[in-house]
Length: 409
Image 1 (cartoon, rainbow, N blue to C red):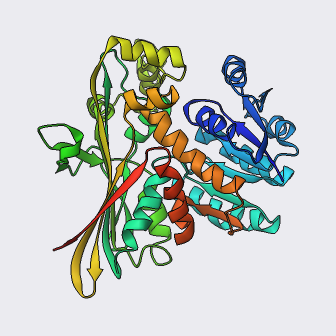
Image 2 (cartoon, helix red, strand yellow):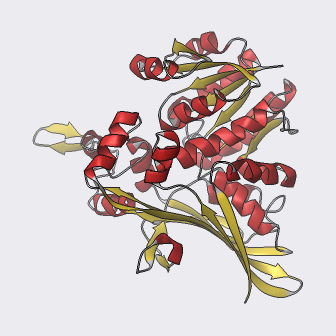
């Protein structure tokens, strides 16, 4: 039976998923919903299967009204509204997908994720539905690539997830995705796993350097600690899916990191109000006000390309250290994907939209093709081996490919 999908939030990620699903023969209707009516109208005008809806995510009832009768809700909203979307999905008995684990269910983000697994998981299972969280590029695609890497090992000691964002415009544009999400992550203590325990680390700390000749650079890039989902999920699932992993690191670099690092050190990513000249200022809000939004319309992206780029490169790499046949082994999985110029030529979108949105759309396609056998709530690192393989089979059709190297140490 052809599926009806609600795409809630039509920013960079949601709009890309909607466009991909418009091409799917097994999709009957895509409801594109957002608070921003201009964005809804612009997207639905492009798509033959789309209808538009105005939704205020602060109200669960508003979400429910748009979601009645849909098979799947794809949640592309900021994390603060995820609780309402999850509850709406349960009320209308729909499957659920998002791009990152919410921090809105408890003041402690780890407890919030545990609530997703332990509370929402059984609720979705009880209605015979599947919820999958963290399905963009990172988390998401990189989690599937990590599972592919770990498959080469008998036991796993250390995982490094490495991301370098090397797309830089001549104009001031530090982030190619939501600035509020980017800056929030930059201002948080990072997560890592050490000797089997989840710990916090200082952002921008513990630098490593890596050099990959395919990036077109003549020097190593620097990558540092960054607050991200992957170490937390791998820690939760270390015995079930990661062969007893002891250490996990997420390392991040690029123009956005270099922009945010001095702001963090100056206290300008703090969300605590401060007294200034008789008034109150929240440093984070002031900084955010001066950061341009990520481009999402075709004409915006074309203008950026016409002005010229400083760099159009990057890397996404998984390093998995462990044992194979009694020997010490390093498994490297490199993810190759279109850069900005190539992404625009292929699809009229940015490289961030291409990798995160298109990568997310592949998880949606698994729903559309009834490939999920799991019921309840899972994260993107909990796919079966068969689902991982099919995911990358689909990804190759989009120019997203893996290269795996197994190195004896």
